[in-house]
Amino acid sequence: MYNINLKTDNSKGLEYIEIENASFLTSAKIYTSLGASLQELTLNGKPLITSLDPLPYSDTYASSILFPFANRIDNGSYTFEDKNFEFPINEKGNNNALHGLVFNKTFKVVNQFTNENQASVTLEYIEKNESAGFPYTYTIQLEYVLTATSLDLNVTIKNTDSKTFPFTLGWHPYFESANLFGSTLSFSSDKQLVLNDRCITTGTKEVSGTNHFEIKDKYLDDCFLLNHNDITFNTPEYSFLMSSSSKESFLQIYTPPKKTHVAIEPTTGVSNSFNNNMGLQTLKPNETYQLNWNIKLQ
Image (cartoon, rainbow, N blue to C red; front, top):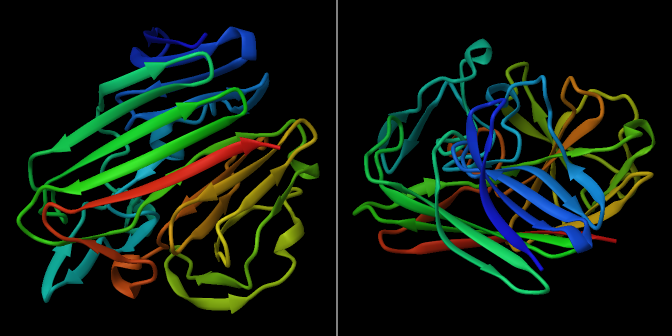
């Protein structure tokens, strides 16, 4: 049977929700005040998402939901419907706005469910105030659905404002491998973004060989345009398939200073989407946008 409990991480002084099924050796930890981010995930006894300590969350954005934009906005500024806007700069070294506005928000549990086969928790953040650079109100719900061998993350965004707003969406999970050098990714892409020295998109280039993408000891902060939404991660301990319901999908791969982990980030947009329009979508007043990301052990 699955259990859902609210607990406190005494080392950090933060509340988290633990979903656990001891019989299946399956568990998840979701930190409510870190943007309802999934900080730990074990499926069928296989640890997939683990702590990045001592690297701080403020640097890693580990498992954060990236909304209203994924990745970066050049100088934090953009134009939408003939009006100029400017997000706060939170990547000081590059003078960029980075990873949206909800990664550090506190979400509240609005629903939970368990049975013998699965458990789900739905968390919600309601933005009632206009934000700097994003003068709109919205709600965002995250539903985590856990089984012995899979995780679904269902995202629902509702525009509660009287104005249409632009957006992209992303997820920033890091996955552990005992042998990252010997781990591989498999995905379908023939185009990769070209970035400048501030990680801002300047174009695309042709690539090949992504059906067997070796991580080895590379430094990666690369983004690929996906031909379809399936991404496979193979490690000596486990393999999983990650999929997305998005019509247009991108894959960001990033290797942090902790060399046991790699970020495998599905996104609906890219660096500077608010200016280059790659993957950029709009949401009208009272409309909702829904997206599913799924991870399934192979």
